[in-house]
Image (cartoon, rainbow, N blue to C red; front, top):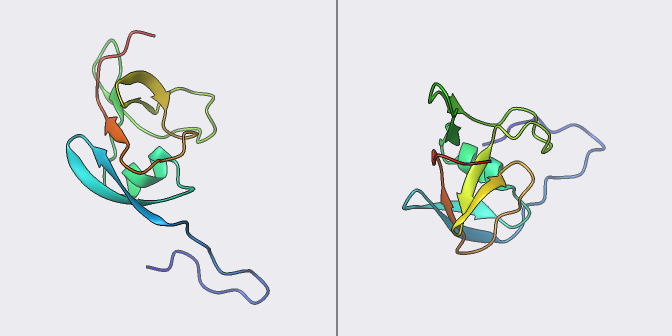
Length: 101
């Protein structure tokens, strides 16, 4: 799928090596250099956590690590910012966990 038409003078998009990560028990495709948020969104996962009071779904918002809306659990470590954390082969990501910040 091309997200942007070819524009003369722009370099071609280079993706890293294809890897697999596990998100909520499902194996999904990712590429080295992707963030966790990019891999989850690309796999159709839109809800990363639930808000503490109302349990409303939260997802990517700022995309640069400031807002903390995209917190996930990675390999058992809670409250990892998905928007700035790169994927690693075999990584286990869990979404929608209650997080004590």
